[in-house]
Image (cartoon, rainbow, N blue to C red; front, side, top):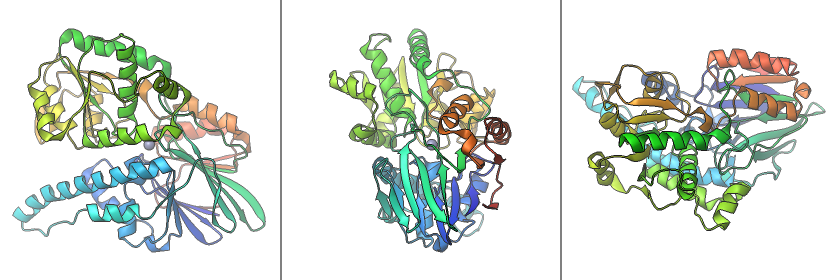
Length: 464
Ligand SMILES: [Zn+2]
C-alpha cells in the first residue's frame, strides 16, 4: 500500500489523501484550501494528482475543507463514484451550489480589477453547472454497512459524531497475501455534543490517518455549553446589544439553534429574537431535520416531547437580502447567527462591519479560526480589523466558547484511540493540524502505544 498526502498536510484545510492498493488509487476527501487568498486560489486550481488517475473516491463529510473541491475534480476529468453517507450527499447538494456562487462572485470582483489593469480575466473555480454535474457522481451508502469498491478492498463508514453525516472511513484490504485495516478519521467528533450520535469505536486498526486540529489543546467539557451560552445571552439582554455569532452553516449553526431552543424552552434566557441569517444555514437546517437516523436519543426525545429541535417561537430564519439588511435597523437585544464560519465571506461580514465598533455588542467565537482569516484576527482581539478593505476599531466584546467545538480535543482523541486499541496501530499519519498541534499530538500518540508516527508534508508518499 502507498499513501500520498495532497492536502491538509501540515495545515488545516484542503483535505485530500490518496491510498494506492493493488495499483488502484483511492482518493480520501477532496477539500478546498482556505486562508491566504492568492495561495488558496492557486492550490485549489492545481491538483497534485491527475484526476484521471483516481479510480474511486471516498468522502468523510460535507464540510468544504473536505468536500469543496469535488466539482473541480470532476471538471478536470474524474469519472468515478464518490461514496459518502446519505446525509453527506444531501448536504453536498447545497454546499457545492453555494460554493459555486461564491467562486463566481469572487472572480467577478477580481476580474473588475484585472480588466482595469489590462490583465486577462480569471475563470471561476467552478460554476453552478459544474456543481450539479458533481452531484451525479455521489453514491450514498448507509452507516455500518460494508461495501466493496474492488475485489480485495472493502469500505465501511461509521458515525464520527462531528457533523450530520460525518463518517470515519474504514478500509479493509488484502495485498500481497496479508489483510490490513486502514482508518481515515476525517474530522473526529465528540461525545455528548448536541443532536448527533457519539463516535463509533473501531478495533484492530493497522494504519491510521488522523486529524489533529486540537492535538495540543483541551476544550471545556461539552456539558458546560448550555451554562456558558445562558451567561452570554443574558449579558446581551442587559446591554441591549447584538450578539453576533459567526458559525459554519453546517453543524455549528444547528448546535447553536438547538441549545438556544432548550434554554428558551426551559425559560433560562430572556425571550430575545434569534435570527439565522444565511440561506445556506437555513437549507442545511432542513437537512438536519430530515435525517433523524443521525440524531442521538436526547434529540429524538425532545421531538417526542412535542418540540421541534430547530424551531422555536423567537427564532427566525431570514429570507432574502432585504430582511438581512433590515436587521441593522432593529435595536437589540438580539442574536444573529450568520456565515461564513471563519468570516471570510457571506452576510456575517456585513453584520461584523455594522456591529464591531460598538462596545455593547458581543462577537461570540464558537469554532476554529484558521490563520490569516478575519475570524482569527477577531478571536485574537486585534485592535483594528479590515472589513471590505476598511480598517475598523474592534470595540465590541469578543468571547470564545470552545466547548461548542465539533472537533475532539487532544484528550478526547487520545481517549478515543485508546478505546480503539492504540497499541495495535503500526503507523499513524497526523494530518489536518497546525505545526504545534501536529508535533505535540504525534508524540502523545507514540506514548499511547502507536508504533510509528508521521507528519507528512504536501506531496509526500509512504510505502507500507
Ligand atoms: Zn469538519
